[in-house]
Length: 305
Image 1 (cartoon, rainbow, N blue to C red):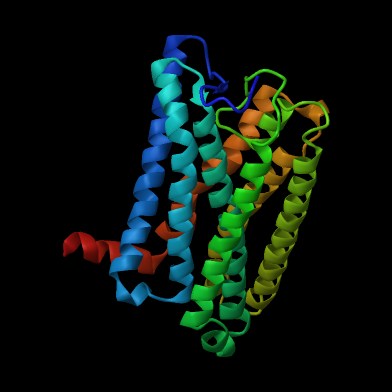
Image 2 (image 1 turned 180 degrees about the horizontal axis):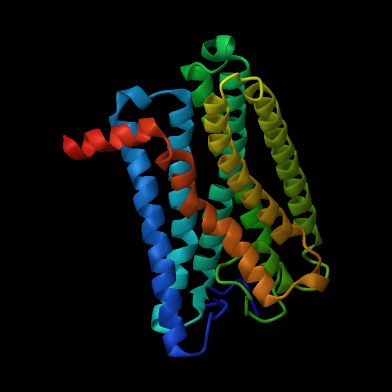
Protein backbone atom coordinates (compact mmCIF):
# COMPACT_ATOMS: atom_id res chain seq x y z
CA UNK A 1 0.00 0.00 0.00
CA UNK A 2 1.44 3.33 -1.00
CA UNK A 3 1.34 5.90 1.73
CA UNK A 4 1.93 8.72 -0.75
CA UNK A 5 -1.46 8.47 -2.37
CA UNK A 6 -4.07 10.97 -1.23
CA UNK A 7 -6.74 8.33 -1.85
CA UNK A 8 -5.30 5.83 0.60
CA UNK A 9 -7.64 4.78 3.37
CA UNK A 10 -7.21 2.92 6.63
CA UNK A 11 -9.76 0.54 8.10
CA UNK A 12 -10.53 1.02 11.78
CA UNK A 13 -11.69 -1.70 14.15
CA UNK A 14 -15.35 -2.65 13.83
CA UNK A 15 -16.97 -2.95 17.25
CA UNK A 16 -19.59 -5.46 16.09
CA UNK A 17 -21.08 -7.07 13.00
CA UNK A 18 -24.71 -6.93 14.11
CA UNK A 19 -26.55 -3.69 13.44
CA UNK A 20 -28.15 -3.64 16.91
CA UNK A 21 -24.74 -3.81 18.61
CA UNK A 22 -23.36 -1.12 16.33
CA UNK A 23 -26.19 1.22 17.33
CA UNK A 24 -25.62 0.31 20.98
CA UNK A 25 -21.96 1.33 20.66
CA UNK A 26 -23.05 4.56 18.97
CA UNK A 27 -25.40 5.51 21.82
CA UNK A 28 -22.82 4.52 24.44
CA UNK A 29 -20.13 6.71 22.87
CA UNK A 30 -22.64 9.52 22.36
CA UNK A 31 -23.55 9.48 26.06
CA UNK A 32 -19.89 9.53 27.12
CA UNK A 33 -19.07 12.29 24.64
CA UNK A 34 -21.96 14.51 25.69
CA UNK A 35 -21.07 14.01 29.35
CA UNK A 36 -17.47 15.05 28.63
CA UNK A 37 -18.62 18.09 26.63
CA UNK A 38 -21.04 19.18 29.33
CA UNK A 39 -18.67 18.65 32.26
CA UNK A 40 -15.63 20.28 30.71
CA UNK A 41 -17.72 23.03 29.15
CA UNK A 42 -19.19 23.94 32.53
CA UNK A 43 -15.74 24.04 34.09
CA UNK A 44 -14.39 26.33 31.36
CA UNK A 45 -17.41 28.63 31.61
CA UNK A 46 -17.31 28.82 35.42
CA UNK A 47 -13.60 29.57 35.60
CA UNK A 48 -13.70 32.09 32.76
CA UNK A 49 -16.69 34.01 34.14
CA UNK A 50 -15.98 34.03 37.89
CA UNK A 51 -13.08 36.27 38.87
CA UNK A 52 -12.82 34.48 42.22
CA UNK A 53 -11.55 31.45 40.30
CA UNK A 54 -8.75 33.35 38.56
CA UNK A 55 -6.06 31.58 40.57
CA UNK A 56 -3.19 29.30 39.47
CA UNK A 57 -5.03 26.08 40.38
CA UNK A 58 -8.11 26.98 38.34
CA UNK A 59 -6.02 28.42 35.52
CA UNK A 60 -4.35 25.02 35.08
CA UNK A 61 -7.72 23.30 35.45
CA UNK A 62 -9.08 25.46 32.63
CA UNK A 63 -6.21 24.31 30.42
CA UNK A 64 -6.85 20.69 31.39
CA UNK A 65 -10.51 20.94 30.42
CA UNK A 66 -9.59 22.42 27.03
CA UNK A 67 -7.20 19.53 26.41
CA UNK A 68 -9.80 16.97 27.51
CA UNK A 69 -12.30 18.43 25.05
CA UNK A 70 -9.69 18.30 22.30
CA UNK A 71 -8.59 14.72 22.94
CA UNK A 72 -12.05 13.17 23.19
CA UNK A 73 -13.28 15.19 20.17
CA UNK A 74 -10.44 13.77 18.11
CA UNK A 75 -11.31 10.10 18.57
CA UNK A 76 -14.90 9.52 19.70
CA UNK A 77 -16.90 11.35 16.96
CA UNK A 78 -15.24 9.28 14.21
CA UNK A 79 -15.94 6.05 16.12
CA UNK A 80 -19.55 7.17 16.54
CA UNK A 81 -19.90 7.93 12.83
CA UNK A 82 -18.44 4.57 11.85
CA UNK A 83 -20.84 2.71 14.14
CA UNK A 84 -23.82 4.75 12.95
CA UNK A 85 -23.09 4.42 9.22
CA UNK A 86 -21.70 0.86 9.42
CA UNK A 87 -18.30 1.71 7.96
CA UNK A 88 -14.67 1.37 8.98
CA UNK A 89 -13.00 3.84 6.64
CA UNK A 90 -10.80 6.76 7.62
CA UNK A 91 -8.80 8.67 5.03
CA UNK A 92 -5.03 8.85 5.10
CA UNK A 93 -5.15 12.60 5.82
CA UNK A 94 -7.84 12.06 8.47
CA UNK A 95 -5.74 9.40 10.16
CA UNK A 96 -2.69 11.67 10.19
CA UNK A 97 -4.77 14.51 11.64
CA UNK A 98 -6.18 12.20 14.29
CA UNK A 99 -2.70 11.04 15.33
CA UNK A 100 -1.40 14.61 15.42
CA UNK A 101 -4.20 16.17 17.46
CA UNK A 102 -4.63 13.26 19.86
CA UNK A 103 -0.89 12.95 20.54
CA UNK A 104 -0.73 16.72 21.00
CA UNK A 105 -3.59 16.77 23.53
CA UNK A 106 -2.40 13.66 25.39
CA UNK A 107 1.25 14.71 25.71
CA UNK A 108 0.33 18.28 26.67
CA UNK A 109 -2.08 16.92 29.28
CA UNK A 110 0.70 14.82 30.79
CA UNK A 111 2.94 17.87 31.17
CA UNK A 112 0.03 19.88 32.57
CA UNK A 113 -0.82 17.19 35.13
CA UNK A 114 2.80 17.30 36.26
CA UNK A 115 2.55 21.08 36.69
CA UNK A 116 -0.73 20.70 38.59
CA UNK A 117 0.91 18.22 40.98
CA UNK A 118 3.66 20.78 41.59
CA UNK A 119 1.02 23.46 42.15
CA UNK A 120 -0.71 21.34 44.80
CA UNK A 121 2.63 20.49 46.40
CA UNK A 122 3.59 24.17 46.78
CA UNK A 123 0.09 25.15 47.99
CA UNK A 124 0.03 22.50 50.73
CA UNK A 125 3.70 21.96 51.62
CA UNK A 126 5.08 25.48 51.07
CA UNK A 127 2.10 27.83 51.39
CA UNK A 128 4.20 30.83 52.41
CA UNK A 129 6.10 30.68 49.10
CA UNK A 130 3.06 30.01 46.92
CA UNK A 131 2.61 33.60 45.72
CA UNK A 132 6.30 33.83 44.81
CA UNK A 133 6.76 30.47 43.09
CA UNK A 134 3.43 30.53 41.25
CA UNK A 135 2.68 34.12 40.32
CA UNK A 136 0.77 34.98 37.15
CA UNK A 137 3.85 35.14 34.94
CA UNK A 138 5.19 31.79 36.16
CA UNK A 139 1.82 30.12 35.56
CA UNK A 140 1.56 31.46 32.02
CA UNK A 141 5.13 30.42 31.24
CA UNK A 142 4.59 26.88 32.57
CA UNK A 143 1.33 26.46 30.65
CA UNK A 144 2.92 27.83 27.46
CA UNK A 145 5.86 25.44 27.89
CA UNK A 146 3.46 22.50 28.23
CA UNK A 147 1.48 23.46 25.12
CA UNK A 148 4.61 24.22 23.10
CA UNK A 149 6.35 20.99 24.07
CA UNK A 150 3.23 18.99 23.25
CA UNK A 151 2.97 20.71 19.87
CA UNK A 152 6.57 19.94 18.90
CA UNK A 153 6.35 16.40 20.29
CA UNK A 154 3.21 15.66 18.29
CA UNK A 155 4.67 17.14 15.11
CA UNK A 156 7.78 14.99 15.45
CA UNK A 157 5.91 11.71 15.99
CA UNK A 158 3.29 12.36 13.30
CA UNK A 159 5.82 13.32 10.64
CA UNK A 160 8.06 10.40 11.54
CA UNK A 161 5.23 7.84 11.59
CA UNK A 162 3.62 8.87 8.31
CA UNK A 163 6.93 9.06 6.47
CA UNK A 164 7.29 5.27 6.85
CA UNK A 165 6.49 2.99 3.89
CA UNK A 166 3.48 0.78 4.63
CA UNK A 167 3.60 -2.79 3.32
CA UNK A 168 1.23 -4.82 5.51
CA UNK A 169 -2.22 -3.78 4.42
CA UNK A 170 -4.39 -0.99 5.76
CA UNK A 171 -6.38 -2.54 8.61
CA UNK A 172 -5.87 -1.04 12.08
CA UNK A 173 -7.07 -3.14 15.02
CA UNK A 174 -8.09 -0.04 16.93
CA UNK A 175 -11.09 2.33 16.98
CA UNK A 176 -8.84 5.33 16.25
CA UNK A 177 -5.48 5.85 14.55
CA UNK A 178 -2.89 4.92 17.15
CA UNK A 179 0.84 5.03 16.40
CA UNK A 180 1.70 1.45 17.56
CA UNK A 181 -0.95 -0.01 15.24
CA UNK A 182 0.25 2.09 12.30
CA UNK A 183 3.80 0.88 12.94
CA UNK A 184 2.55 -2.72 12.58
CA UNK A 185 1.68 -1.91 8.96
CA UNK A 186 5.12 -0.52 8.13
CA UNK A 187 7.76 -2.43 6.19
CA UNK A 188 10.11 -4.65 8.17
CA UNK A 189 12.85 -2.65 9.89
CA UNK A 190 11.62 0.76 8.73
CA UNK A 191 9.80 1.49 11.97
CA UNK A 192 12.76 1.13 14.33
CA UNK A 193 13.53 4.84 14.28
CA UNK A 194 10.02 5.78 15.42
CA UNK A 195 10.06 3.00 18.01
CA UNK A 196 13.25 4.48 19.45
CA UNK A 197 11.69 7.94 19.65
CA UNK A 198 8.57 6.49 21.27
CA UNK A 199 10.68 4.72 23.89
CA UNK A 200 12.38 8.02 24.75
CA UNK A 201 8.97 9.75 24.97
CA UNK A 202 7.59 6.99 27.21
CA UNK A 203 10.64 7.18 29.48
CA UNK A 204 10.07 10.92 29.82
CA UNK A 205 6.40 10.21 30.61
CA UNK A 206 7.54 7.81 33.30
CA UNK A 207 9.73 10.53 34.81
CA UNK A 208 6.69 12.84 34.92
CA UNK A 209 4.70 10.06 36.56
CA UNK A 210 7.37 9.56 39.23
CA UNK A 211 7.42 13.32 39.88
CA UNK A 212 3.62 13.30 40.33
CA UNK A 213 3.78 10.34 42.72
CA UNK A 214 6.54 11.99 44.78
CA UNK A 215 4.59 15.26 44.92
CA UNK A 216 1.50 13.50 46.24
CA UNK A 217 3.60 11.47 48.70
CA UNK A 218 4.92 14.72 50.18
CA UNK A 219 1.40 16.14 50.20
CA UNK A 220 0.07 13.09 52.06
CA UNK A 221 2.88 13.39 54.61
CA UNK A 222 1.77 16.94 55.39
CA UNK A 223 -1.92 16.00 55.37
CA UNK A 224 -1.33 13.27 57.97
CA UNK A 225 -0.12 15.96 60.37
CA UNK A 226 -3.43 17.81 60.22
CA UNK A 227 -4.93 17.53 63.72
CA UNK A 228 -8.52 17.59 62.52
CA UNK A 229 -9.85 14.25 61.31
CA UNK A 230 -12.35 16.10 59.13
CA UNK A 231 -9.53 18.09 57.54
CA UNK A 232 -7.54 14.94 56.80
CA UNK A 233 -10.60 13.26 55.32
CA UNK A 234 -11.32 16.25 53.10
CA UNK A 235 -7.71 16.39 51.84
CA UNK A 236 -7.57 12.65 51.13
CA UNK A 237 -10.99 12.61 49.45
CA UNK A 238 -9.71 15.31 47.10
CA UNK A 239 -6.18 14.08 46.41
CA UNK A 240 -6.77 10.33 46.12
CA UNK A 241 -9.26 10.54 43.20
CA UNK A 242 -6.87 12.94 41.43
CA UNK A 243 -4.02 10.48 41.85
CA UNK A 244 -6.18 7.54 40.75
CA UNK A 245 -7.20 9.17 37.45
CA UNK A 246 -3.66 10.38 36.74
CA UNK A 247 -2.28 6.90 37.44
CA UNK A 248 -4.90 5.30 35.17
CA UNK A 249 -4.16 7.74 32.34
CA UNK A 250 -0.37 7.45 32.45
CA UNK A 251 -0.03 3.73 33.22
CA UNK A 252 -2.44 2.59 30.49
CA UNK A 253 -0.87 4.97 27.95
CA UNK A 254 2.62 3.66 28.73
CA UNK A 255 1.35 0.08 28.49
CA UNK A 256 -0.35 0.77 25.15
CA UNK A 257 2.85 2.10 23.60
CA UNK A 258 5.36 -0.31 25.17
CA UNK A 259 3.49 -3.61 25.49
CA UNK A 260 5.24 -6.54 23.75
CA UNK A 261 3.56 -7.93 20.61
CA UNK A 262 3.27 -11.36 22.25
CA UNK A 263 0.51 -10.16 24.60
CA UNK A 264 -1.23 -7.93 22.09
CA UNK A 265 -4.81 -8.75 21.13
CA UNK A 266 -7.66 -6.66 19.65
CA UNK A 267 -9.77 -6.89 22.82
CA UNK A 268 -6.88 -5.99 25.16
CA UNK A 269 -5.74 -3.14 22.91
CA UNK A 270 -9.30 -1.80 22.76
CA UNK A 271 -9.75 -1.83 26.54
CA UNK A 272 -6.36 -0.21 27.21
CA UNK A 273 -6.86 2.53 24.62
CA UNK A 274 -10.37 3.21 25.93
CA UNK A 275 -9.01 3.61 29.46
CA UNK A 276 -6.46 6.28 28.54
CA UNK A 277 -8.22 8.07 25.65
CA UNK A 278 -11.91 8.16 26.64
CA UNK A 279 -12.25 7.62 30.40
CA UNK A 280 -10.04 10.51 31.70
CA UNK A 281 -11.73 13.29 29.66
CA UNK A 282 -15.14 12.07 30.80
CA UNK A 283 -14.19 11.52 34.45
CA UNK A 284 -11.89 14.52 35.06
CA UNK A 285 -14.78 17.02 35.43
CA UNK A 286 -16.25 14.91 38.22
CA UNK A 287 -12.91 14.28 39.92
CA UNK A 288 -11.38 17.74 39.68
CA UNK A 289 -14.35 20.06 39.88
CA UNK A 290 -17.80 18.73 40.62
CA UNK A 291 -16.60 17.83 44.13
CA UNK A 292 -15.22 21.36 44.48
CA UNK A 293 -17.43 23.76 46.42
CA UNK A 294 -16.02 26.86 44.70
CA UNK A 295 -16.85 25.46 41.25
CA UNK A 296 -20.36 24.55 42.42
CA UNK A 297 -20.93 28.05 43.75
CA UNK A 298 -19.65 29.64 40.54
CA UNK A 299 -21.96 27.45 38.43
CA UNK A 300 -24.91 28.22 40.72
CA UNK A 301 -24.28 31.96 40.35
CA UNK A 302 -24.16 31.57 36.55
CA UNK A 303 -27.41 29.63 36.44
CA UNK A 304 -29.23 31.99 38.81
CA UNK A 305 -27.90 35.16 37.22
